[in-house]
Image (cartoon, rainbow, N blue to C red):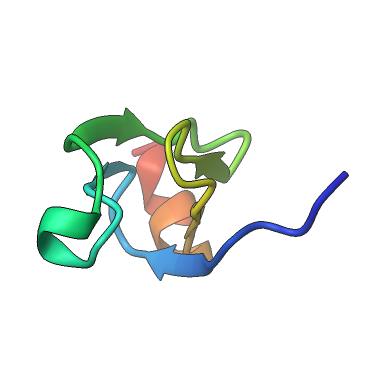
Length: 61
């Protein structure tokens, strides 16, 4: 398995990704991180979004 393009820590389970780079990016996609999984990968650019430990702890409340 290849390493992810980039790993980004986030504080919210709801994230969006447009690949960065303005017109060189990709269509914006909205992703939802499942707290029990704790991460999600963008299907376009393979950026990996990792939910912070604090956000994971509060997601169940």
